[in-house]
Image (cartoon, rainbow, N blue to C red; front, side, top):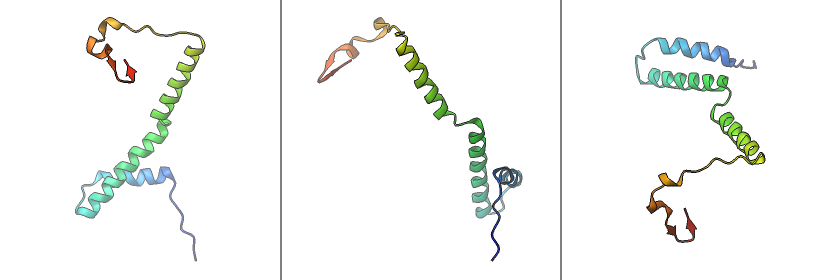
Amino acid sequence: MMKKNRLTARQQYQLDIELIKSKPMNRTEAKAQLAAKLRIQNYKGKKAGGGAKNAKASLEKANALRFGERIVESVDTERISDSSKRWRGRTAD
């Protein structure tokens, strides 16, 4: 038996772009095109480097450094409405 060769991500990306260029003739082709569009978005997202995960990690790191340096942002309590300031059961705002 021969082993099937899988396409690399770049080759799959090129095939997906070619598939999207033409209009689908039936429902099966439309589904294949949608899958190709999703793969293209996923490929572009991986190239960007994780996006939200990296942003969250860098924000947590920055907050930890600021906390270590004892830098705390002031909160303007004048803008908070009185209804938000009242006591609510076990927790208070």
